[in-house]
Length: 115
Image (spheres, rainbow, N blue to C red):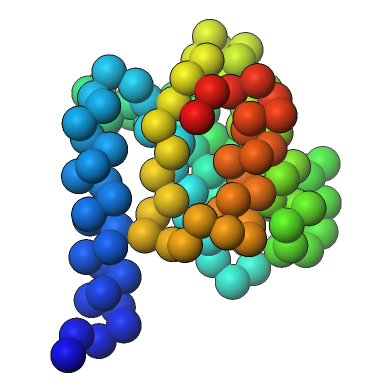
């Protein structure tokens, strides 16, 4: 039986491989730690981060809950629309799609980003 970290790694790679089939769209990648949440839009063809937002930025607020994650998603969506990015592919990073990860996606959608 595989240990927990190996299962997480395989799940993360499985999600990433499915996303690579849609190579013409940038990838919205979410990383969730115990204290903070980070989101960035990456162009895999160039290997560059186009837009990034996190709960460590000023004006986001304190805490690590769903409200903060929604604010991170909306801030990322606003930055993306300013740069002319309208549609992305969501990379949940091997985490389940609920809670803070889902809140980032919903916040980005509210800001006008198509996921």
